[in-house]
Length: 94
Length: 469
Image (cartoon, rainbow over all chains, first blue to last red; front, side, top):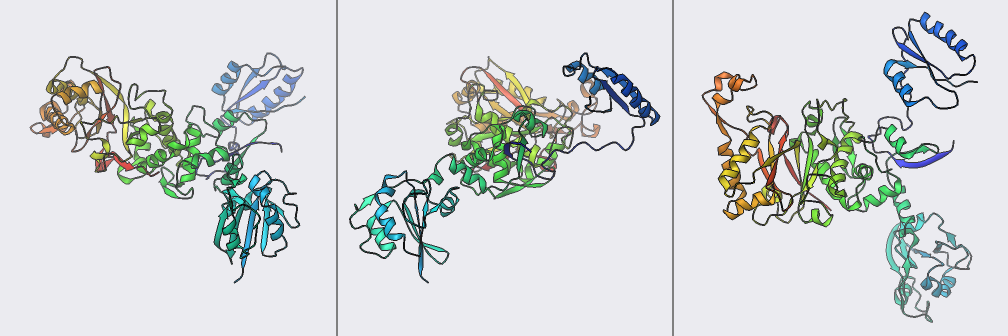
């Protein structure tokens, strides 16, 4: 792994130095899950399938899409997703 | 036990070059270890060790090269830094050593005490965990993401910066100052130094930060409760004594405002210690309903007023001592009185403003600091009033009949139980009103800084703590 600047830990050092992901929810039932279509051809087919699975597990699904896959999602869209959803599936594929 | 010797030199030192014949004479001796700091080919004798990391020089405490150190067993028994012919001859028990050389030549600085090596070597001795950021990470964003900031950018606490910060105190980095709430984590001088770097302090501020942390951890200050309360308050730091001026603190115009590095970063460093070491975070254990902007930083210096006692003297210290006074403070409430030229009317204005601390009908609850500006202080000085006389008059003016303070009085439900209507009450508990001088030369403005509703033994009392350099 390439490494960058070394800094000294200012904390009480009771948590691991590496950042840990948030704990996974025990269930998606009752949660609002956001699916972001990055606007590549047939991405919607894949996301329809994922949506079906999530709904079967009791989740509410909201769909979003980026204007173009060539650029990062606009800030307003990212904020909207953060505001409206409990969970977001993040993935990268081609 | 026979002695052994260590000699440390560097090629980039004319004195070391001068004594090359001595080094050649010593090389065959089995009891002599020769270390060179820079050029492994100097001196050109067999068995020279290259102190590439400079750790050997650092651990030996070498400040000047050439250095000659004699050991008996593990114990150092003699040392000579620089060339002193007689001393080298005596230590090495060779009366002819370097006889052809001059009697005395000063040496050069050891690389181990020269930046950047000196900082790296000192940093290697520090205990705190090192966190390696990712090469692609933006440094500032990485520090925010780790939760180390109060919301404003912080200075990355590299080991070298922390080592430089620790130069500001003579105290041992490993010294434990106490347990920081809410998680009651022991805090060392070193951890405070790391947070002082984050806050943007200069090394010369560190003794003040250390004293502020120590003061916050004194039981009467009740830092845990102050952090956890829903009330507005946070720690305010007032620095008193010549050190305040020496490190460039502001006690004059805009003393309570922005723009002075020492004021801004010392108060911030204390808050960062509570946040990072103690784990006290807003909406975590910090349950403040609204908080106040002083919780980023609230620190200023007292303006030395020759006619009034200062905060040192108020706490029983010598006038010229250096101290921090901590107070569980809310925000600043201004008082304007541009007409008073005699003490009593000015005290009336002050009293009316002080009455509203917490609530106009609350008494014996919050403490208060009254920050008296120079133009208001002049009114008292012209009449020959001491600080104590001002406080006594304010206490008189702030003593009110229970009828005005009970529930329902003035149409307000807030107030004392009705049974207390026939008594009278002082606004502040004994010792709960403190005066401090600060501010610019122009302006008949003073300031009330109200305190946490839980004062004294049930909550926090102001504490004054002497600064150790």
